[in-house]
Image (cartoon, rainbow, N blue to C red; front, side):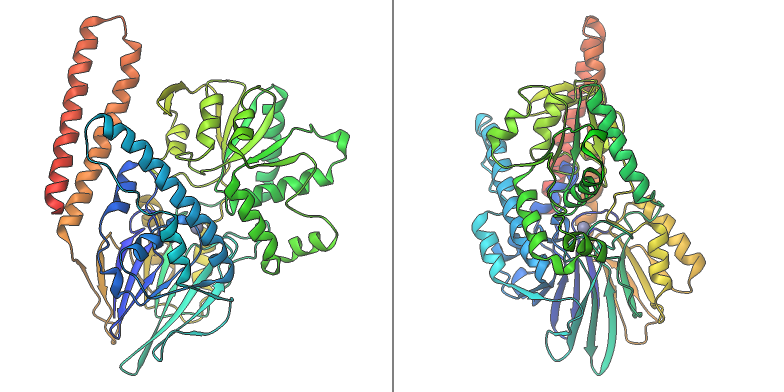
Length: 542
Ligand SMILES: [Zn+2]
């Protein structure tokens, strides 16, 4: 048996792991790379396998960084089975359609520029019809149901407590009479979260592939975060500002609504500032409907709330915004309000439009409630950029920039260690995926100190051969050109940072003609370096 790590290796997005056993090819997730331009470019690269040869895709949950390249897979010849929970299937449909819409819009925008420069037109990664075809291959299952893919492969989904329908995958593969058990954590949830259950423990396994997003963090308590959220709403709106909360439309948005509902329903009307809360995301609206349809998956607290007659997704000052016109209206007058809009890292979606209208305003506040990947707009704002280019316009950042980590839907260091500790049969080997370097290294040293198990941090494109005596496990780079290209892309990333820093300074020395000329020269040189590296990547890739 072989496992190849083809995404979310040394990074948090693009989850995609290929298991080859018994002449069968199983993909664990097929997610999109997200973050900055460098990461996103990886989505356009060819798969490192023939999509037509994949027998099964086992999908852990509907988040785009786990599901987003499924339509591309189908577009390029996949004809196998996609195995997912019922809620994941329902959420995947609306999320992938939304993703196709974004792909098409982004390409349209890029092509307008390319056309003016006389460059070749780009094709979107996929469109609506590819998503519709992909949905045809989905099969819906329930948690804890034994799913026999064939005589040698079976699996069970357990509630991962990360988002509605999210699953930990227990996978048994029989090869030549010997069964190996692989557990894939997908994204492991945090504890005591709104709406969904705590992550399920599993008994054990031979090999564990586990996420490590917050391997170096211990989250704040969620109750404290709810209090902080309420006080940030109060402070911002009392001084006449708008609070913008960039949030994933599916999962995080519903959790925030749930918490706000609990707060506003509890307080008597006179006791709170009755500011309007807008959820400006058609996707969030559709997702909330899927949540309502799958109430059987909710935790006891949410079920009790519903039984008491309260709909957790509705309260008097909450409004779902659907049309673009209404969304634009929100910025026509600067009345105090809260706007929850996607995307969560502020790289796309309606939130950018709200940022454009509010970042300059020091009365306003932008509050991040989720993970911000390296290179993303959210991370740059948190790192303190002074200006931000949005829709072709340079906007001064005067608004307050804040974050709350406690809403995270991911297990922190403590939960991950405890989750492994609860396994009665400890894995023979642990692979850490879905994490950045620091988080992974910290988690690895904790695992090394606490467990006997060998813990490995696979690099992108690493291939692991699993032999039946479990002794010799070989790590090899099977595609050096790809690794080289990835390094080159990282170099472009650092040149890019220099370039951006330069642009900021350029504005400050507007009046000094001599300095300005030197800056211009240096800027041109940086551009030239980038172009040269881009050429090398193209050549290397061919
Ligand atoms: Zn996720």
